[in-house]
Length: 329
Figure 1 (tube, rainbow, N blue to C red):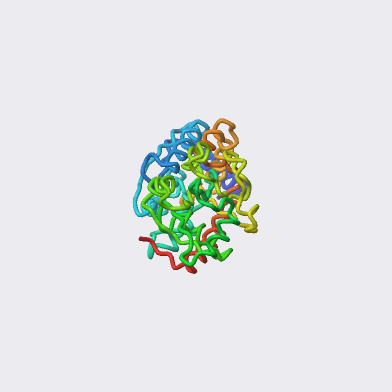
Figure 2: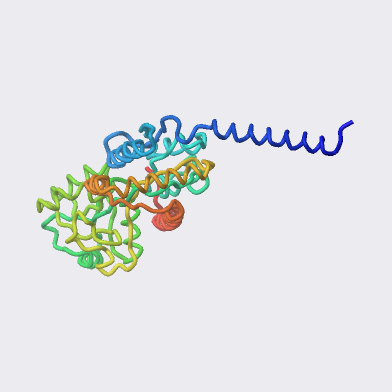
């Protein structure tokens, strides 16, 4: 017959054993990361998005003590690679290099993208903003954005502006400018920013709206005139070029951006660790300088802040796309 004290001893002993086994299992669980991490870049190698992703992957790997391997999965304007990450195991070992065009514009211009920007991903943090700039051929008479808007309104056929293609961030930003100012601008889509740049350099089109990285050499050589940048503040790479806001278009900010995201159900502890390490990378002066050379301004910050920004962009660009009736070609 078991006495009460013996039964208590048995229960206490069993509880202690269970606790010990639990602690032992926790102690044996490998710390994250315990193996290489895959960073899916939903575009082909060589572009600014890919190059910035490779820089971050290299630096992040050094801080985490595990290699971060870039895996290019291009197709459907970034939708294929993005969908792949949305359905990946949420264990912190598959991450996405997010691009604003894919995350906040594609859902509005494609009939189906295969992912939900807000439900399928856990934001880790924004890497940086790629400043957009409106440039003109040097012989073009309008020199400021105010002049461009005024000239466009005086011409029945409007003024043509080229971009890298239908539904890209410069196109959406151009349509937003039209909606905000009443400018009579006519979009001319090219198959890539290089072709648009060639035509504005040759005087075949008066204006091109593009990422600043591709325009800087031509602006500095005098082959292109910088009209204005659409960032909130002047670009450090072209500090003499005024913003749209300085030209009277209040509260106008339109940048392209790159960011890190994980599948939605990734454990918060892993997301927090990745956010901390990403911010450490982005605060490194050498990394910031390299990103700046790509036309990207590093923007360390919280995952929550980036998540709110992504949500805001998804909503505001949706309104622009609907008003302009933009559809993917």
